Every structure is written in structure tokens, then in C-alpha cells.
Image (cartoon, rainbow, N blue to C red):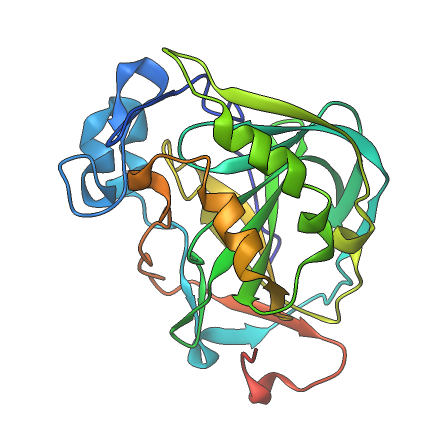
Amino acid sequence: MEISARIILALGLASLFVSSTTVAAAADAVFGYGNGPNGPQHWGSLNPQWRLCNGGGRQSPINIAKENITDRPKPETLARDYADAKATLVNNGYNIMVRYDEGVGTAFIEEKNYSLQQVHWHMPSEHTLNGERYDAELHMVHKKDNFYAVVAILYKIGHPDTFLNQLMDGLEKLAKEKCSDNQEASVPVGVIDNKSLRRSTKKYYRYEGSLTAPPCNEGVIWSILGKVREMSPAQAAALRAPLAEAYRNNSRPIQPSNGRSVWMVDEGKNKEDGPDA
């Protein structure tokens, strides 16, 4: 069964305003994390355009559990081809993003070539493997027309990450920048080497879900890489530093799977082995 990924979304959710407790987003609505009145359990009531956040049936993130994994009808290699490209580090208020200034490459997903638009981080991870949450999660957002696909990489604290190494100076500068009313803070970082992002993987999990922040549009194709990578404590701290305190833990809670299948492609192991780290 082919996944349909139809959504209409303005990437970046327009401009944002950071304070110590809230982020002002599109339509003057605000959303946050934690248990406050603007927390994830209330997103759907903050803006009529965000109603899917609390009323949708195919929301993300989910727990990737062994018992939910099914055979992939048409196994496909997650082929990705990224080139070096100019980029800008952005603090949009609720996460840190690398936004590419030009074409960087594509991922071949569900028989379509999706162009990589940006990457951003959530800490701790949003998706879990067999109930285990990791220290961070990278989302690589791809687009084709009005179709979206996200490739996610999970991280644990350990050795420095090659991709993040080249962003450390930019993150330090970004931490000194301040967002003002209806603006985002940004720092150009020049040409970024994206080879480590396209590192081949033999194992990934796929399902149909949603954006993990408002407006929570559904129909997004998710590919969660099975190999958990590492980042250093200093890199994790640098990713959090530019954000206001209330957004340094910016992970949406796990959403009900509602009977959705999770497909696994693993060229080296059998499905019965289930998720691993």
C-alpha cells in the first residue's frame, strides 16, 4: 500500500517571537512544551488551523515497537544524494534549524524524488524505539510539490558528530543573537559538507504520520533510521544554548498509533529481531 503524503504547509511556520515562556507563531497563536496552558495537550485549541494536533488520528511521533512492525510490501533502499551547499543556522524560537540557501540534493522515497529543504533538532528524541527515548533527534525535511517526507536520525550522548562539528562556531554566534518581535535569529555558516547526512543505512522504519509541531498536518512520510548515532555533551549543549529555557526540551509526547503499521526495511537482519540501538 503506497503512502499518500499530501499536506499544504509553509515550512518554518512564518516568523516567531521568543520570550522566556512562549513562542509567538502564525496567526498570533502561541505554543509551548511542558504541562502549561500552551503545552502539547492544548495545541489543537490554540488556533483553528491547528485542530489536528489534538483531533487527528495519524499524529507523530510514535513509539516504534516490535509488535507493530509489519513486512514492507515493496522494500526499497532509502537512497539519498546530498551535495555541499550554502546554509544558514536559524533559531526559530522552538528549535535550531539548518536552512539551505540553494539546492542540496534529494531522497528517493515512495517512488518520488524529494528535495532536502532543511534539518532541525529536537531534544530529547521525539520518536522512541521499544519505549526507549534518546538524547536527540534530527529531522531532515524533504519536499516535492506539496508532498513532504522526513528522515529522522536518533542520537545518544557519546563521541562528537561529524555534521555538528562544522556548526559549532555558528551555534556559539547564534546563542549571542536575540530574536525580536516577529523575527527569527540567524547566522550564515557558509558551505556545509553534507556527506555524513547521506551515510548509507541498511535499516529504517517507515510509517505515515504528521508534523510534530503545529499545525500538525498529517500525510507526512516518516523514515526513522535504525542506526543510533552519537553527539558529544558539548554539541548537545550548543544546540540548546540559543533557545529560551522553556524550549530547550522541545519534544512532543508520543502519540497513539491507532493501529498504524510500521514498515521495516533491513537488508541485514530479519524483521523478527525488532528495533535495536
